[in-house]
Amino acid sequence: MEKDKVALLPLGRWGEDLAAEYLENKGYEIIERHYFFQRTEIDLIARDGNYLVFVEVKARSSEDFGPPEEAITDRKKVYLRRAAEGYLYLNNLHNVDCRFDVITVCYKNDSQPEIDHYENAFE
Image (tube, rainbow, N blue to C red; front, side):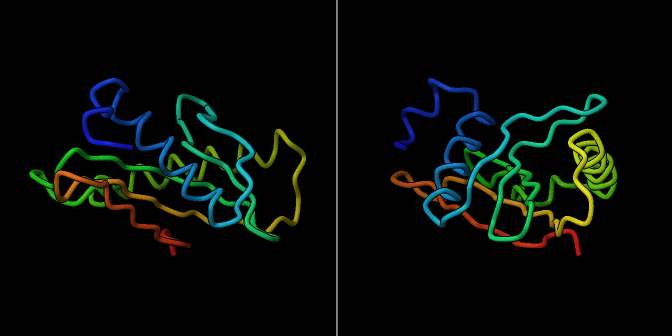
């Protein structure tokens, strides 16, 4: 997606769209988008082989305020874990291998966004 198209979508939605496309190209199956549990949003829930993957997406139009992954605080991780536990409970999923991934999307030049994927990012 070109940088001028970013202005047409809210930045977070644009980043999530790119992240979902990126994961699908890697063979992941997107199961949920924008899943909410007790006011906490999990951006993407995907299947990667035997793993159920809870994905936090951080998008930035620049790195003027630091890398996007730095915006994921310990408190945010606690809320995301709680939301993931809620998803597992409400969907009657037991003994499922899970992990938390982070995908960052950032423009570092004027042409293409840079996408970084951090698997098992909360360990």
